[in-house]
Image (cartoon, rainbow, N blue to C red; front, side, top):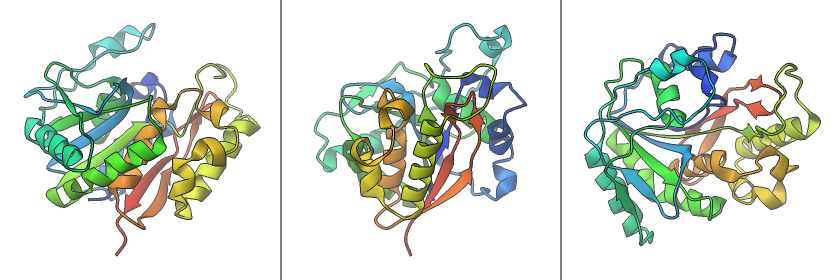
Length: 262
């Protein structure tokens, strides 16, 4: 299995047909991503914990972790089964790779960074899903190493998907204009070039290497899922830009596929 980083942008991705990213995800299988995974491990920017944590449940509830949106969004459902066996395997792999403290959450469901992309990509809701948290008290290298530890899952039929946003600055969002400011475009372009050229160490140290890192990501929660996806693809993996669009000028939906080197 290839690994992916999907930019999920705003929660309105669930209902707003004017968003190109929504159409991209809704036609996921038509675009050639036809291999149905045995299960999905999703790393969402909306679950932050001090140490790596997996949700261990038989059935996923969904979390409406957004406020002030149209009422129909709170009626959406995505009854995907849980993946407790995968969760245990994730914990086993992380522990074996030196992550000494890996926790289990037996109550948490899927936040919108997980269930909204899944709802669009796999609407049948018949694939078991496990979620893994990010640690905003750590750095890109920590998350890259998490991904490296999880690489064996690809050979076990597991789709590893990071879910965030390539540029994610809600404070600077433009509700009317969709003009992309130069600082956002510069970061998005830098990220594209770094990934396509395989400069993953630069991406791990984006705070020093990238232009305008604190504007593009005032908080790193939506960026760290990318590092997990890169690490899980293995050494010398090849990146491919599979979608690019914007919302409000400061939310980039740039999404990437990472293929294991042959």
